[in-house]
Length: 384
Ligand code: GLA
Image 1 (cartoon, rainbow, N blue to C red):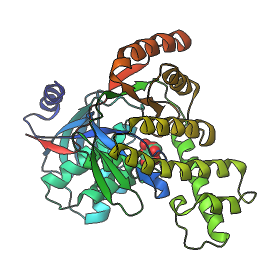
Image 2 (image 1 turned 180 degrees about the vertical axis):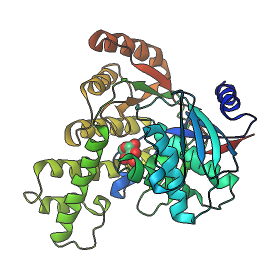
Image 3 (image 1 turned 30 degrees about the horizontal axis):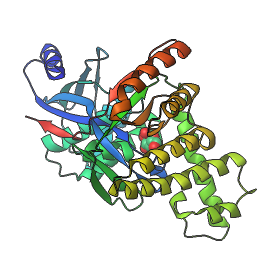
Image 4 (image 1 turned 90 degrees about the vertical axis):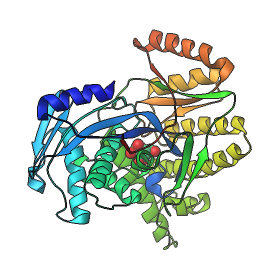
């Protein structure tokens, strides 16, 4: 359906037809705000993403149409050609980041795209968009950029063209995602491992609070700055080899108590604990011990809410409700400040949990949460 919709607009705006490429949004089972701290994350691509029809146009300009926003943009490849629409900056940024790495290799193209990842829900719609275009241009122009670099192109786009100092998790998941598997990534070494994820007797479901935090990107950048402040303090306290919070343990953190703000201290405490939780969850999964997986998810929520302070009343409410309903695990997912909780729910509890969550949340906040059952799917790809 999405493909037809895109093609119709491609024909209307540019005539003829192009190649189709797609990429995915992501979930993350556990490991939040750990990526830019050199820690572990545990994401997977989902069956919601972005899709684009693209064709080289024989010029040195890009013409792109957003089907969902009913908006078009046109730009060249020089830094000063940056488009003003924020959605178009993702596409422009990908082009610029390719040029920075590979030189003058790009050719003008026409594209129409659409997506079904809800925007601002913490499922990485922007990474899906970046990955779609990075993957497509690499494939169409035979640039031989490896998959890690494709992910970094998306990440640098966020840093340099969209104002978000993000880690690598979202773009990594969007590029490397594989149906049926979560991926544990060590963000320091970039080693990764696929974990087939078919929890027998359980389901994963996202509850979207539909809350979007206006200042999410600056709050996100401030969290990252706090982590860096603590790393600098620990280094100065006699640990010169420390590079990331990943390299810091609780005893080292205690050495800088009083030298960093209470707030920065709390942020670091959360991150150090969260990195360990990812490893604990992987161990538990190898034993099919979903009770432990779920308990760790609740611990993450608590840490994100009280120490990292990236939750909000709506997400705390959904988390409390999950606990009351006996849901195995629940926590705020992604960057926070709104968006979704991810819930690990026993099959037999699923229907009653969802109906109660919808009812009670609506009664309290005046709108329904959205419900997205998780299907772990493939990442960036060309469509036949
Ligand atoms: C956002 C960022 C990621 C990651 C998460 C939190 O999704 O883009 O790099 O930091 O927040 O885990």
